[in-house]
Length: 173
Image 1 (tube, rainbow, N blue to C red):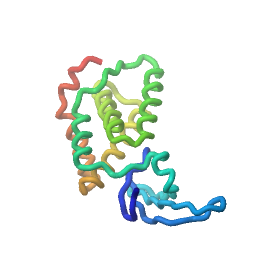
Image 2: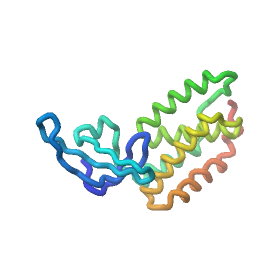
Image 3: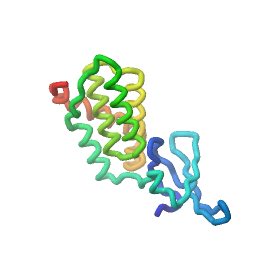
Image 4: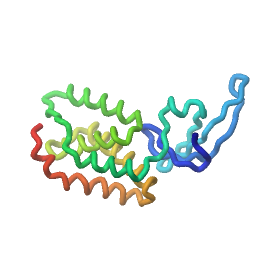
């Protein structure tokens, strides 16, 4: 499926490079492994080749998928009511964490868009800010790797899209 030196996306952690493909004896049988080195984290993981799909590791997005993701960010945010208590945030947080764990570029871009919208209406809580930054970092890493641009430029590209969507402010919450 993947080859040595391919860049892949590990759900919830970001872009990694396949730096080694090797075989090990596990429970009496030979198992093939991919060794993944993360670009922006001092972290390396070994994933059995036969569990790649189960873990959710996917190829780096194409330029076309990146363009679709950027369009998603400029679309109006889904209806989100401001909460009087923390219960709505807790429910949204569980949904957002679930989406991040899938590694789906579309899901992460929707989280980013929704939280950016909320931040223009009210101050984000610590948890919301943390999640917004995580989504932004995951998106920027993938944009950077797929389009071969500096990660800071990718972050600026993401941030510049949101103010262009002034119509979002006029959407009723």
